Length: 427
Image 1 (cartoon, rainbow, N blue to C red):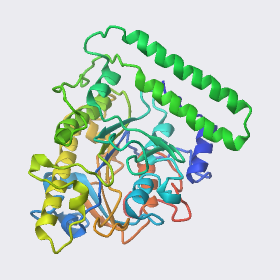
Image 2 (cartoon, rainbow, N blue to C red):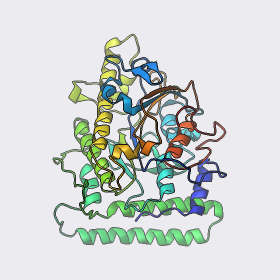
Image 3 (spheres, helix red, strand yellow):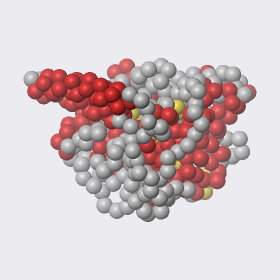
Image 4 (cartoon, rainbow, N blue to C red):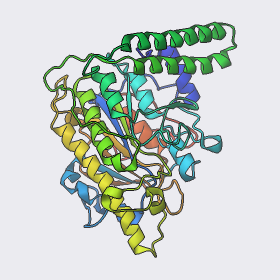
C-alpha cells in the first residue's frame, strides 16, 4: 500500500511546496467535499470562443462556443475567468504551475500538486490515496510537458493510460493468469531491495538529502501499489466496469475509446470507495493527438495556434474543444447517476470537480486569463450556477479555495509571495 504521510512528513513536504506553515494542517468548519476530481485538457483556448455571455448567476453559452455542450449543466457549474499563473509562461511553465502554484527554473515545479496534497491530508481509509488516469500520456515519456501531478518538488506522478491495466489494479484479473503470482513476487522483491538501500542511505545522510530520499521512498510505495492487482468486493452502486478490449491504447484513433474507458474507471473507483481523489488527464500540453473521429487531419496543438484570420482553422480547434466539453458533461452525468458509497446522495452531491487548463490564449503562449470550470455540490460547500470574473487574480487563490472546499484551512498554496487566501467570491 502507498504510505500515508505523517503530520511531520506532511509539514516537510508542505514547506518545500511553499504552503503556509501557520494554518496548513487544520480542518475548516462547515460543509466540505468528500471527493476531489481533476479533469485536464491541453493547449489553452480561444478566449472569445470560450467566454460565456452575461455574468453572476445570469449567463449563457452562445451557440457554437466551446462551452455550449454544457448548457444543460449550466446550473451545476462555476465558470471561472481571468486567473493568471504569475511567474509562469508557455506550455511547460503552465503545466508545472497549474496544480502546484510553483513554477520553477525551466518550468520544473518546485512544489506538490493540489491533488496529491489533498489526498495526503485526507488520509482516507481507501486502498488508493489517489488514482491518476491518462489518455495518450505515455508516448513522450515523463517530463514537465507530459505530467501535471507532483508528489513533491520535481517528483512527477505518472498517470496510467492503459485502461486494461487500471481495471486489473482496481478489481483484479477477470481470469487467473499463469505465473502472475511469481512475477509479482519478483517485482516486489526488487522494490524491497531498493527500499532497504534507500533507508540505509537515508540514515547516513544530512537532513536536506533525507527529504529527497523520502520522496524516492514514496515513489517506491506508489510503484508497489500499482503492481498489486485488486480484489474489490462488489456492493450496492459498486460494479466492475466493462468495455471492449482496446487494440492500441496509444493510437490517436483510440483516444475517444480510451477516454470513455478511463472515465468509467474513474467513476467506478469512487463508487467503490477505492479512492477519494482522482485525476483524468487527456493527453498533455503540446498534444499531438489528431481528432480523426471528427474528420480532422491536424494535431490538436497545431490547431490551437490558428490565428483569428484563419476562421476555418479556429473553427476546427473550437470543434475539438467542444468535444472535450462534451466529455466533461458525460463525467458530470455519470457522477449524478452514481450513488456515493458512504451516503449523502450521488457522487455529484459529494464531490468537487475541477476542469483545468495550463494556458489562456493558446495563440499567444500565455498563462494569463486561464479558463477553469468547477462543478459538483461538494456536500453543499460550493454554490453552483455562477460565472465568476476574477480580473487577473493569481491562480494560487483558486488552489487555496480548492483546499478549503475539501475541508482544509491552509492560508496559501504554492508560491505565497504571489498571493495568500482564497479566491474572493468563490466560497
